[in-house]
Every structure is written in structure tokens, then in C-alpha cells.
Image (cartoon, rainbow, N blue to C red; front, side, top):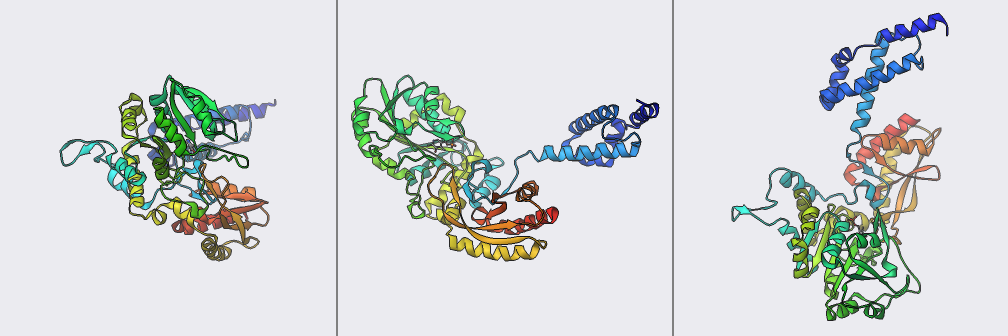
Length: 477
Ligand SMILES: *Cc1c(COP(=O)(O)O)cnc(C)c1O
């Protein structure tokens, strides 16, 4: 180590600005307004410490780093550190993937009416548990529950945090310490760590598997009945299908032997549907009203899958059973808050006035046919071609969207995709730039093309998407 370098490093260290000086700068003031005093000081101290280490190791910074340069460097780093910290909050994105119920992107986007109910009615003080007429404490969730009864024909309803919580509550309260009979073909994993055998064992119930993976008969259920049998459990396999040589007893036939033997028939319908979606190819989804009519004692399903509302676990069924779920202390731990009730009521009201298909975003997206999407995407592609720098190629190609959320895994609605190919940059880098923009645009990648599916893009987001695409193209050209 020669002498001039050594003294150079210590000069650089001597030039390191003090934390106080840094905090007094205008740039630190900008961070402080958002991050607060304490967090700003922490960020700046951390960066200053690591810069000191860097200077000592004589890495990166030349020996002649001036005070002004170091000052600038730390504040620039602090700004970008705060920026990336801030971006970790829950942020709005444009979903251009064509996956309608995208679990990673928050499943169902709320309807305008549901958003208004959350923001305008429930966010502040509200009547979540207050009876205006009586001027005293009211019943939580009364409106949601009565709408669910109207829409499904069930006697009673109860709402918990999600469908996994619903299954756990039902099994714990109605089958703990006793046997639950289920077909081997329905011992499935739904994804996101929901495994039927695990939920069953955590609830304290004993699993009694019957039949085989592909075929289970009514006599298989009847054959294992004993004094410890609490329940017959049907689970909708959701994102999994057994096809070919298969057999399952109907809910109706199971209901008959269940009631004869004083056994509860419970169906975990998963996504479930409140209206018939067979016209969109979704004939595999249980209609909740039909399950109730067929004699299921309890049915549970998600609020944010095909229903198109907020995250919630909806339980409907026989009054005596629902009331015993409500009385259990576990329900208190799994209940939902006022924001969820408000969004759910507004969503269910769309169904009650028969406007779900036009008002609920997921249903509208599923219902959009390829021709309608073609018209939108062709118009969009024209505008985009005018915006993009030379060398970019925009085309409209045939593709498939995905329903998602475990519904209709074998249904992939035809769509028209916008395929973008740039010159001199990879699709991977373009896709990344879209993701890192504001708002982030989540697109698909295929064959070195970036694919945009307008099925999942709200028409009022198109202008923003256009801007995001041209900004990303400008930066990557
Ligand atoms: C999705 C699903 C669940 C879990 O629902 P969440 O609302 O995500 O908790 C449970 N059971 C079935 C059959 C499902 O499809």
C-alpha cells in the first residue's frame, strides 16, 4: 500500500458528512415528510456507515471523493432506499395477464358499488354492530346474512375470514373428536397450503377415507357409518379434475342417508356460484342454491373467487348448525370486519337485483367474448403503434385467458392478445420495466414477446396502460 493512497482514504473519511448535516439537507427533508424523523435518521445512518466501510476498503469511491460528492451520494442512496421501502406497501396494479381471479393480485376486483360502500360508508364510524331504530347494539353482518339466505335458499348464513376458515370452523365445531367420511378422490390440495387432510386433522376430527381416487359409491359412504360418524364431507376439487372412468354419489343421494343416520352433510364448494355460469363454460362449479336444494346441511364458499366480492368465507345452511357455529368462541376469532361486510353487502345486492353479470367485474370479464375483446384490442393496438418508438412491432394474436382461483381449470376462454416485440431489447427486460413502472403493469411473456390481455384490464385503465407501455418502450429502446 503506497503512502499517497493511504492518506487519500483518510481524507475521504474526513470528508464524510456528519449525520446532522445530512439530516438538515433539503433532500432529507423530502424523505422525512413521508418516512418521519426516526426512519429518515436510520436510513441515513445505515448508508453513512456502509459508505464509511466502503471508503476504508477503498472500494468503488476513488481516493478523491469530495465532501460534496459524498453528501450527494448518501442522499441519492437514501432517496432510493426510501423509495423501495415505500413500494413494499400494497399498491394498485394493472392486471394485463388475462388471469381473472389472480390470487397474487388480490383475486376479485371490487365492483364500483362495493368500493363506494367501503370508502363512503364503512371506513369511518358506521352501523356494523348498531341498530339505528333501537338506538342500541345490533347484530353484526345481518344484511349480508339475509342476502345470502335470499340468494341461496338457505335458512341461515355466517361469514368468516375466508373459505379455509369456514372449513376449519365447520369441522371443528361439528365434527371434533368424531369421524368425517370423505371420498379418496376429494382429499385434495387447493393451493396456498389448503390441504383437506391437514385441515381435518387440525380440527380434531378423524378422517375416514372411502372409495378410490376415481370411483366412490354411495355404498362406500353407507358402509362405514358408525356411532362416531359426525359428517359426510364433499370437497369441490377446484383446480383439479378427475375425468374418464369416474363415479361419485350425488349430493341428493348422500343427503338421504346422511339425514337417516343423523350425520351432517357438508360441502366445501370452493369458488361456488350464485348464478348459473354454464353459458360461459363454467358448468363444473357448484351452484350454491342447488347444493342447498339437494339437501346439503352446510355449504361453504369463498367471497373473492367467482362471487366477485371481498375476501371472506361464506357459510350457509341449516339454522341449528349455523347457530352452533356462531356460538363457538372460534367464530369470534375468525369473524370479519366492517370493511368486508360493506363490500360484501354491495356485491350481494348486485345479485339480488339480477345485475351481477353487468356490475360485478369478474363476471363481466368472464362474460366478455373474444369478438368484444378483439374490437378493444385492435383499437388499442392502433393507438399504441402511434406512441411507440420505431422498431417496435405490435400485433393482435389469438390466445387464451384463464379463470383462476381454482375455478374452471379446464376452461380457457378464447381471447385476443396484444403481442409486443421490440427491437434491440429483450421481452424479459420490457416486461420488467412494465412491472417497475407506476402503476405496475403485470403482463405475460411468451416466445420473446410481451403479451397484454385486455380481458382483465378495466376500460378506464386503458389510457394509463397506453402511457405505461410507451414509457417502458421509450426507456428500453
Ligand atoms: C379456494 C378454496 C378454499 C380456500 O378458500 P380461501 O377463501 O382462499 O380460504 C377451500 N376449499 C376449496 C374447495 C377451494 O376451492
